[in-house]
Image (cartoon, rainbow, N blue to C red; front, top):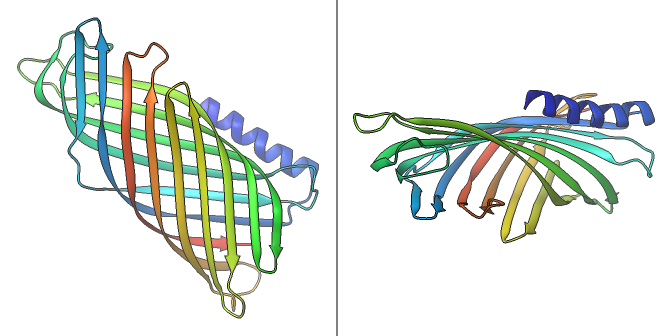
Length: 251
């Protein structure tokens, strides 16, 4: 997985830096307090299992970087990282289980997300408005852990998935202030599966600091994964939603 991320990131950065001078660089990071909900199910000719979320909230890290250059035909690049986690209970059989898990066996899900987003500016800060469109290449690494007990030997597995999502971002700078309003969305639907990631935020730039301008951002984020495996045996319907806050730098 690290090799996949390294390759995607290297291609993205190399394309921008070799083809054009960087005109703008922004980076940020912070914490996201997400409240998970939903379930996973498995059905294979009578062997059935179900995972149900029981977690109220989790606090996880996120980070992002935006690289913009002045040549219109070459896409700009945005890189993102996020992590979401959930705790719940599982019962029955899943693909890879040696024996069915007893009812209400504790389990955890940990999803690490790496996004490489080539995008174009449709409107670039014209009358304080920016609109971007592009494609999000999302690499998801999901780890499942089911606890061991007297009746069950436990189970752990890691799977990887690459999702291409449509990307749209809009931003408005409020004139005569250092306040920006921004929202973006990523979406895909195919073969009975749907995934999306929507954010809305407000940020405040400390404009009195030259060259490197720090800023604060606060927003709300919703992720939805309604996915069906290719063999239709495993279904995931999980939501992660909550407030996030972080620190930004503009160069």
